[in-house]
Image (cartoon, rainbow, N blue to C red; front, side):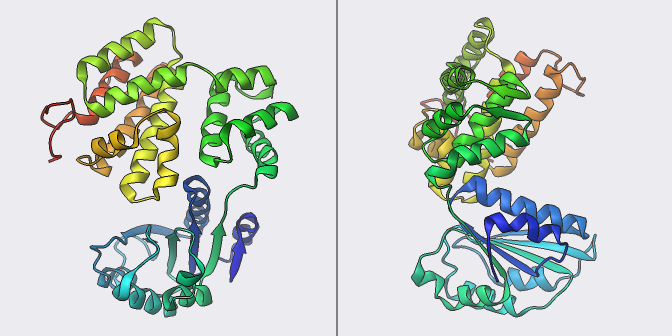
Length: 348
């Protein structure tokens, strides 16, 4: 069965979940939100154990059969995710996906994530097998003429609204990029809280120089220049830059880097970094020796820093949020030996 993305919430609310969902699209934000919604619905129905298979060129596709048929240690029901970022499983993967499509196991729910497929790939045997047995969701972009309405709906979710001219201005600035719009909306909530937004408030937030100051911090983190990191954070504090906004930008960047380590398509994962003015080559070089687990630990520290800023105690952390931001920034390459040009050596 094929399902439009706007039909997914109503489908999930009915409570009868499919055995398998295919989420196909190139936009990281929209496809990620679709998968999150399916995961949340699955958890309410007892799919408490989760297995993730990253289908890269080195994958042993027998792992799919083992994961699907193995006994669960913690839950009777499990969620199995197959991530195929290239949309090309190869011969072994094609056979494995066709066999998996024929399975009828009520205790296993599968999510297959793919890029948007062209007509030729969509006609391949493995894709046709999934089309015939799964609920297939094609996630397209947001049409330019619908973007102001989409932004307005997102604002309403976070308790905000904006004038028509403010919505049109913001739609022009993000240039059809939902991830960029998501970033700007998060910033508006941090800066102004719930309520009505004027064009002047939206314009000031979009052009806020703090975003460009934050890019200097992100660049220092990527190069591993410890002295520059310390100077930059001290400068941001001295200038009175809002720490919650800086923390939010760093958090969003870390999420983008984690998606990159997952193998998300370059156009999607790179959107945030490019909007911060970071050179793709610098990001690639800096991320190469880092593990996804290390980036995830830094993202968890962002949540701790947010608690510290709000005056809440966090075990084994300083109560000065600016010191903690410095330590977090220094932590990107903390386990890598120093190397010429700033970035450390190979991740151990």
